[in-house]
Length: 100
Image (tube, rainbow, N blue to C red; front, side, top):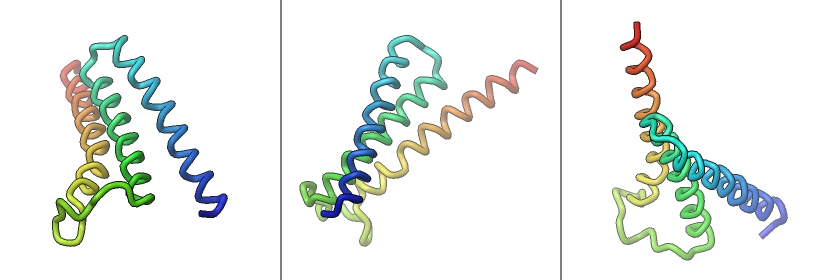
């Protein structure tokens, strides 16, 4: 493994962990649905990062659940943060358009 790959992996883990940590702190301080969905999306993004790094090292078994040639777990984890963010944005748009 080259130094560039190590820096890439370490930066993804450290920055993702910081984002997840602060998201959890925010979660404990707010009960707003939109913000809770953003927090869930951030945590899901970190879970996807950890899973992809474990897969890179060959620790996870992706061949158990496949959809064609794609791992079902990878497919779900990759798209789950976007689903949470979309839901949060829909909540915010609905809230803003209701006030008019």
